[in-house]
Amino acid sequence: MIAFLSDWGRDSYYIASAKAVIKRINPDAEIIDICHEIDPFDIRQGAYILQRAVKDFPTGTIFLSVVDPSVGTSRKPIILQTKDGNTFIGPDNGLFTFVIIGNELSDMRELDNPEFFNDKNSVSFHGRDIFAPVAAHFSKGVKISEFGSRFLTYESISFKQPHRDGKYIVGEIAFFDHFGNMETNIPNSFFENIEFGDPMYLVLGKRKYELIYDRTYYDVRSNELLAHIDGSGFLEIATNKSSLKNLLNVKEGEIIRIETN
Image (spheres, rainbow, N blue to C red):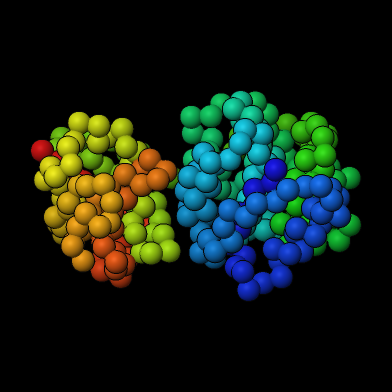
């Protein structure tokens, strides 16, 4: 199975071209789209969404991931495998930061063997001409060692590691979803001793917002701020039937503090 993520948008032909290359090499390849509406050039958002999506796929999935604003430069195309059995193919620009955390690598290679590239091999379309054909060949059983030379280091995104600081739980905004809900990088383990209904506050710089910690959106009234654990096991902050993104003037990557007793 090949799971496909990009920032290409549904209104472009790029997705179809990459899939066509895969199918030409391996007609039996199963391709599942994760998301193609990553904000353009937003590596951080792509990395967080990839982290959340991986958990729902079967072991052995090939993750074709292309958010690549520096395509054609010295950044390297790579393939890596984690010891839990998954494979990731894409640019070495920090996109794989969060799927690597907690997953020991079994192998990582620079994609420098043109035998497995598309014949066109353009400078600015590595998604079609390098990453997609490599994913297809790998899905047919080509060994990772055949794609290129061993690669020992990789790029990582700088981010705020979730932690406790006195009465605060500190983390960062991962991204805003389609509904304008604020997805954070704070895992549910920080809330194991907090009960539904306990007082809680969102602190953004000097601003402070009261939160209702509960199960789901309809547990609060319209426009009240809800804190709950989302389907991926991370803290989400939302409002009932409205967009928190439109309410708060904040961006992904900004530090947030959750005040608890």
